[in-house]
Image 1 (cartoon, rainbow, N blue to C red):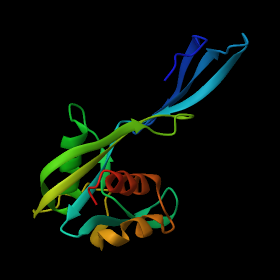
Image 2 (image 1 turned 45 degrees about the horizontal axis):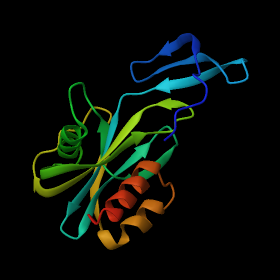
Image 3 (image 1 turned 60 degrees about the vertical axis):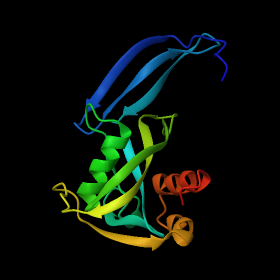
Image 4 (image 1 turned 180 degrees about the vertical axis):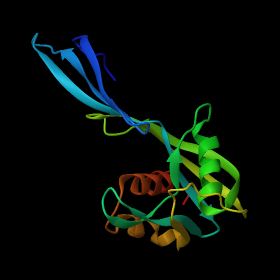
Length: 179
């Protein structure tokens, strides 16, 4: 990766709203031609997506997503709480949402999401050695747990309404030979 030829100086920063879930605002930035432009952003906490393998199956959650008005089959996921690593958050989210406690969790990848508008990092973790425990759903989580054969995982992830986190998780885990 090369350094930019211009320093992209921020001349003003404004927070326009805070929701408790995310913060939104803009940075006024000096562009290479000397003009200034407001670049709007939304800042969200880090999130984790869990690729959980149970034998020859992949663990998924089936839940309604009010934001898009669709029922979605997805990898378990959630917010990384203060002081947590992606792997610690992944193990916790997996236990809470699916009722599976993993013997091992490893980080596959972490990266920025939607860099044109979001200040948001996502970690994809792999969980294995799953043992059943009691679920502990949040008050806004109404989901069921299901499994699909690993051989069908990518096809299932690509079914509409497909989402980026599930497709990314399956592809990265397959590329690393975990699925």
